[in-house]
Image 1 (cartoon, helix red, strand yellow):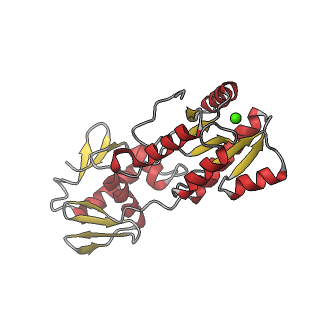
Image 2 (cartoon, rainbow, N blue to C red):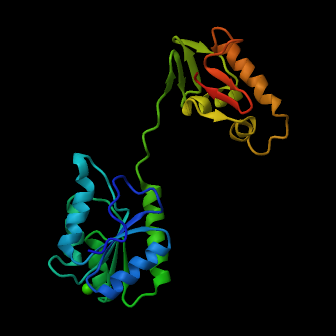
Length: 252
Ligand code: CA
């Protein structure tokens, strides 16, 4: 195996992590290099059994489910376990990683068999590197859009203040607080980033939008209103704190 980048300990946050499975060194290295230059993180495997081990390792690392590969570029004619069997095994194990098959077998039947065992796309050799990259990109984009939605944070809590983003509702000690939409957005931003210091300009951009033409004192006015609604002693705030010379932060 030639690892251009070691398996990361956490899922890759770059463009994606691609596993290239190809026994012909020159093709393997050329594909790996082209994908690396496009910004992808790449791991390579020379045969089917090595690839299968990498895929299974990536999913069970640390005893928890952890998908490391976002895409597999898979040659069909491989030593030990061939590409079609590998594809079947990967799908049989329940992995949904997109698979792009590379093969010199370019007949329609070969393509159909490849797609039927669970591949998502098929590229016949010889192929142009630009087409390969474009297909990889398309597969990654598609899988990105079909990923199950991430669970949303159901609420933000700080001491006795609870903010429910989905319901646009805020409570203090279980009592509803009546906030305007701007006050709510401002508080949501603060509570999502406890202790982060925000300048007035940053708050304007995030809450009012980049087209806002008013004065940055608008922020001060809204902070004052929020303090009056949230703080026990608005003149001595413990939630919405002024950071002299910078702006505001949430939490003392
Ligand atoms: Ca081969």
